[in-house]
Image (cartoon, rainbow, N blue to C red):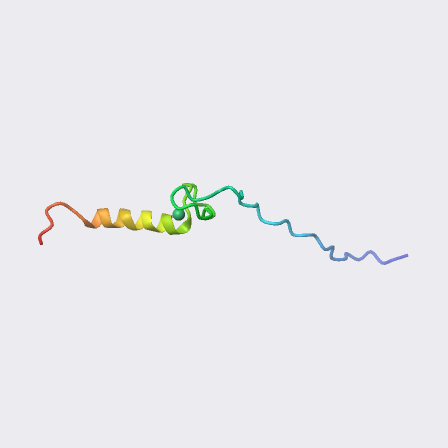
Length: 64
Ligand SMILES: [Zn+2]
């Protein structure tokens, strides 16, 4: 009889949830960034965030 040993069982690691192949940026058509949730690729998302930052910086009453 075999000893009552616990042998490591090779459990196949499930692949990460695939990103839909048709998930493309609504702006430029590049593949969407994972977890974007906005339908944007990482480039457009960065641009968008950058735009937000710019709009924050461009406050009224700005002296030239
Ligand atoms: Zn894009």
